Amino acid sequence: QVQFVESGGGLVQPGGSLKLSCAASGSISDIYLLAWYRQGPGKPRELVARITSGGSALYADSVADRFTISRDNAENSLYLRMNSLKPEDTAVYYCNAFAAVTTGNTRNYWGQGTQVTVSS
Image 1 (cartoon, rainbow, N blue to C red):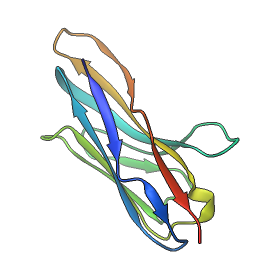
Image 2 (image 1 turned 90 degrees about the vertical axis):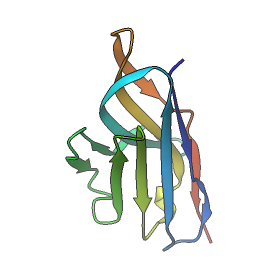
Image 3 (image 1 turned 135 degrees about the vertical axis):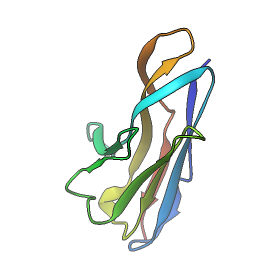
């Protein structure tokens, strides 16, 4: 069974930093596109950042100068470094992956989410 599990969320004061991680497990043969999404209270889920297998990154305008997405292809892991956090960054953050498994199937996967709360 393929799983993507996030970690690293928590409570942080405005201006603080957090680093989220997402670890993949299971019969994965290749991970193409990895992304972080978030869903704030009463808001739709939105793309935060995404990164290709070659390392090309794209960011939402609201986080472009504060967040950094990265991946470790050897470890099938995804990261999100978040600096200068604001209360409006409060949300559940989800790992998303477009991946292939050893049986040959390719599909979209979601993690269970990790809560990030920015508050004084």
